[in-house]
Image 1: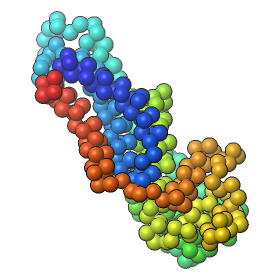
Image 2: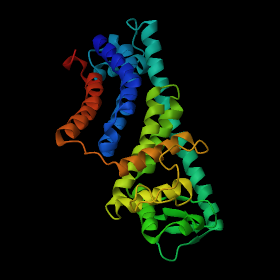
Image 3: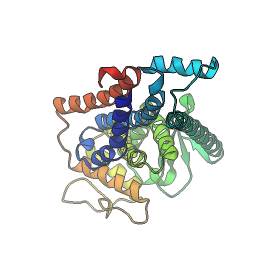
Length: 325
């Protein structure tokens, strides 16, 4: 278990710093956002498991050769008042740190869920007062506001898509359909659960590069996934125009002699908008206007296999450390 704890600690460091930085700078995630999303989840889960596991295995090392045996030994110490002469001060500290970190992560996850649920409930109450149901689109409400607005509000059977009449006045029927398909894809693919998990991860460990970079990447990847779903039902030019209108609030002149119309500056970040959101829109538009070849089956398999390996290794090292070291 001694070597297992050191291996887990090394893995935790790799997944906390160089791995997320390398993935955030990679160009391939936009070619396969689903695969990239799986890998980001694996890095986050394996990183947390490795951090807790390294301290847990180190602290339990004197009590057994594997996790189950060591936990039985710890149970005897705590419940049956068996002597714990083999547990040194550093072992007790490691066990305490593992317990505190686990409790912190779980507590932050629950607190984040409660906060988001409360905000959604308040938001829904406001929509009940300030919006009216769409007569042409089910599960859609319209608010009176000149600013182009389109988003979805999760809530199980009560989930709705929210549009502003300012946006509806700018979009053609096809562009409106593209926006609706995009927003409904967020709901059907349960993207709000991913956002909740990564928001909690960042709240729990804001100093960790994994949490910050992962949240930013996941926010962009779910938009790409929704774009891919929309392209299945509307043509690419229509979706590009709809994204640009939502982002900038206006139609612009025809560019490049094509039928696509983009607002002026749509492919440049707007300093008046949120930097991350504006940059994400730029990446989405460029991805649609300059499509790249998807990952090959071998490349996708390699990324998914890496994700599975990241989750398997710390789990096996926790339960049966002798298998690897």
